[in-house]
Image (cartoon, rainbow, N blue to C red; front, side):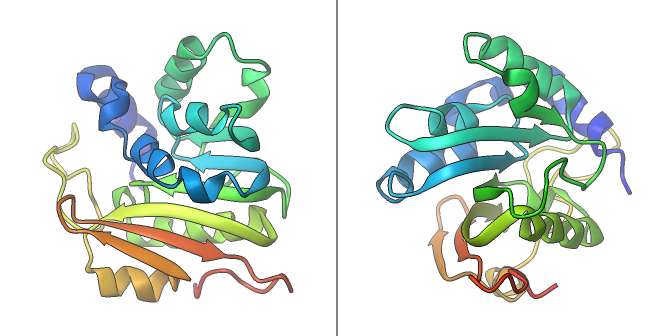
Amino acid sequence: MPDYQDIYNDVVNTDARYGLAQNSPGFRAVVQAEHTLVHLAGRSLDVGCGIGFAFEYLSGHQFNFHTFGVDISDQAIAKAKERLASMQHLEARLKTLDDQTLPFEDDYFSLVTSFDVLEHLDEPDIDATLSEIDRVVRPGGTFYGAVSCRKSGIDDKFGDNLHRTVRSVDWWIEKIRPNQATWDGAREQFLIWKRAATDGSSMFPI
């Protein structure tokens, strides 16, 4: 497995664009979907939360979420905690990942989000991440995410493209089998909604 932590600590510390909300795919996605998200409630988890723009927005009073976020970059989590220092209980709510394993109980979240994260992983790690998302979403819960279907304009510190798995929309549909999906042609980005089955059966065809 690549050293994702090393890669994304370097990105967080060297690319100033990472620190701006207007450059955050997650922030953009939750703002666009506010009309849907306000009807959901419970615990929410943002996988690959970065410095916390989507996490912060979903923590707003217009929503009914108890928000959590995780990221492989300990530097991103440190910056999120510093930026959001006025919020309560951040030590418990923002966590650094050691690998693809999410540090939460089964069926813990009503909503899991993940924006422009999966394409940054090698294919086996995509499956591992989707399996973990499936594990922590409660029956009847919701997954809302986005994937980019193009190469990144940035290479990592080792010379590899940041988008390690660039695949077609059809490939992602087969991988995730969304209930609803929207294609953003300008950004070459695929927005995905998936509802977990109420009987606890697998969410993704892994």
